[in-house]
Length: 123
Image (tube, rainbow, N blue to C red; front, side, top):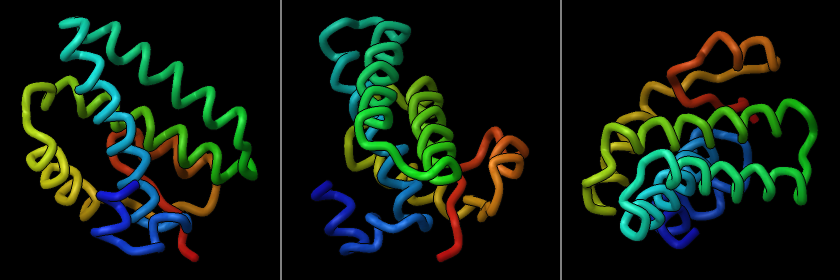
C-alpha cells in the first residue's frame, strides 16, 4: 500500500490504472516473498492465489470490479514467472511499464479479450 500511496496517492483505491498496478504488485510481491522461503515457483504462485482469492471473497466488489481485480491478480502472478529474481525496485519499474499498456474495459467480456495486459475501468 505504501508503494502505491507514494506513486499514486489515493488514486489506487479507485478502479483506474493505479488499481490495476496495485493488484499486480500485491501478487508479485507475495510470490517473491514466498519464493525466498520455498524456492518453488509453483508453491509461491499457489500461495499468492490462495491469499488474494480469499481477500476478494471476503471483501466482495460488484461483478465487473471483482473480475478486473482477479484478472490483474493473475497477471501479477504470471509476471512473477519472468521476474522472480529481481529487486522490489526493479519489480516496481517493470509494472510501471506494464501499466502503460493497460486497457480500459467496461464489461467482463472485454476483460476476457485482454488475457495478457492489465485492465482498468474508466471512472
